[in-house]
Image 1: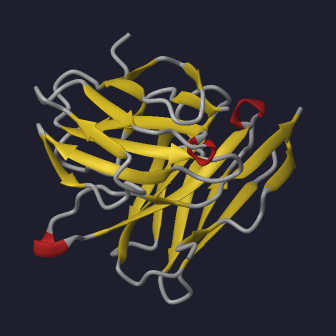
Image 2 (image 1 turned 60 degrees about the vertical axis):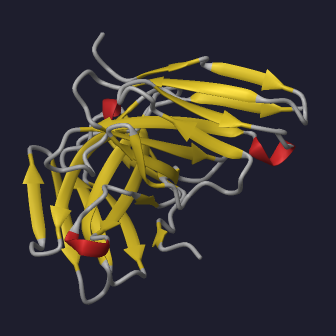
Amino acid sequence: GAGVSQTPSNKVTEKGKYVELRCDPISGHTALYWYRQSLGQGPEFLIYFQGTGAADDSGLPNDRFFAVRPEGSVSTLKIQRTERGDSAVYLCASSNLGRLEEQFFGPGTRLTVL
Amino acid sequence: DQQVKQNSPSLSVQEGRISILNCDYTNSMFDYFLWYKKYPAEGPTFLISISSIKDKNEDGRFTVFLNKSAKHLSLHIVPSQPGDSAVYFCAASAWGAGGTSYGKLTFGQGTILTVHP
């Protein structure tokens, strides 16, 4: 299909390890967002890309979190020295110029840190 | 600080009746509001939106009402169908510096809607 895809769908890691989560947005969408959803909560904004650049990274919780989008399409969210509190579903969304709020979400990556 | 709140964790409705989902917000800078629907193991799907210059927007069975003075919005689904059973999230965005909307969404906690046949 032509929707937003995310890999892996599930990731289990040990405390202290490094993980990478990948997002493939809808072709042609220049805006890309990462959100994190903890159990019983709504998605929480992490970072927004417009093209290759991070236009707003105010939601990243600390410097262990980093995201890139080198060619303006696929994005990777990187988490260093994972902690148990990082366990959540990480959602990626993309959008067209026009009405950026009307975003298309991927199915998410469920990260579990043991 | 929860800027968008959905105080009802769940709602149960009979098929064919009206479902009313509520949402409150505290940030006066929010100027665009949306409802997203989420099925298990899927990402949220955009449902309907409303700009702060309006007080109502309708799309088929779905209507969103905005009361800016009360900082309250609601989603009405009429008639409700079993396929509407899902988690519904209210979301809001604000204009950023320089008059640009980045599309950064602030979500509520969600309301689980169950429509019984």
